[in-house]
Image 1 (cartoon, helix red, strand yellow):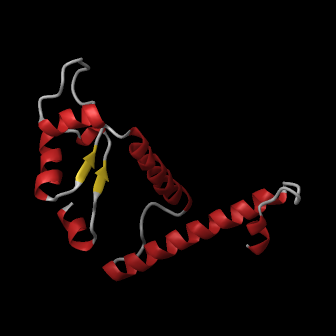
Image 2: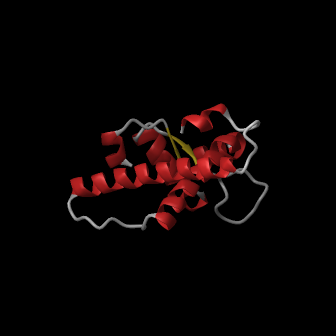
Length: 134
């Protein structure tokens, strides 16, 4: 996370339950000044409040709507890996960056073409106005 913070400004991170520990919450919040959104489900199920300050906060103020956005990000990563190889063939850092940019561009073009092909089956009276512009 420290390397990511040196490149971009983060306001919040979202992770799955595997990263739910008081130490991870404390590091992100106190050392890196980033809000965490990690479901507090580690350990045995209980009615008691979690022991750590930040894990207790997650139990009482967990934002399920914001956490669901993580699912969309994971879905896009999965689509990229399935359709366009889960690795890069290049060796240098800058070549890898270029290749990843091209993969994302290709993915977006594939989605646009798929939408255009999908809307061909719909009666043109009901098709969205932007479909004729693509």
